[in-house]
Length: 314
Image 1 (cartoon, rainbow, N blue to C red):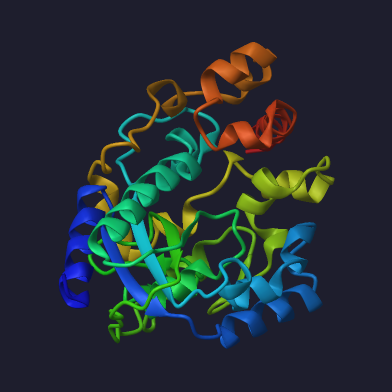
Image 2: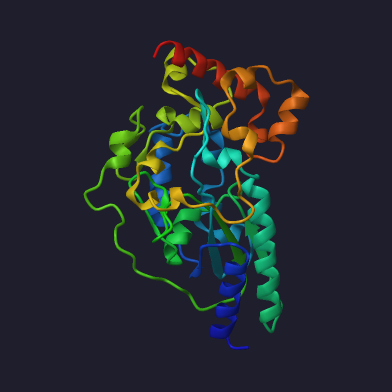
């Protein structure tokens, strides 16, 4: 099978696996993204996410992760769904209510990698990357033509929006690239910047994680300061505000997500009081299959206490 037909077979497989967009890009330096990351660290806008200071070279050059890497396969999987039912007080981000994307995407990308091997005449070495692996995933997705980053730095996939999980496969073979010049998705729109309650989106493409509700409720490991506690608002885990106001997400938010990312019904209505009453076994039973489990019960209860205090002041 020639390379072009191989690419089409792989893209069909990706669609079968539930990916809404997929493509290939060549291994080239992500100079702009690397510069932005170094600037963020220099200005301490990464907060206490010390892991971001590590492996910058690997992020910029995937050959450090897979020797001989020549191609990056990027794919996006949607997780949008309407919130017809939600808690009267306290909120979880949509991605917190579904099966842990690390597991789902890894499984699906392994299927795609197997398809690549089946359709390529020679030996293929590949490395599946999902979130925890240090790569500039949004930059590779842009290079492959999947979408463009919005002002809130989220990748916006045409006709699909930004409520997507991203994953990659590094490959040591050359395949035809699928770059597509996409227009700036934002134009004069500043909905995400204006709607962020903490001012975490400083300007187009520039985030101060220390003010981001998602960072505070998911990444920050210590107890909140009084100011940080107040910044969390009604969010017990994550935050969807900048995506909920984005015009590109208005259609997708009314549609059900792809199979594999249906919300867990009990989590649609869970309250801060219910979280505070959870035992370790109850927490495991309720959250073991979700991304929340990685954060742990201690921090989730910290978040719930903050939300209760914030709601009292409303």
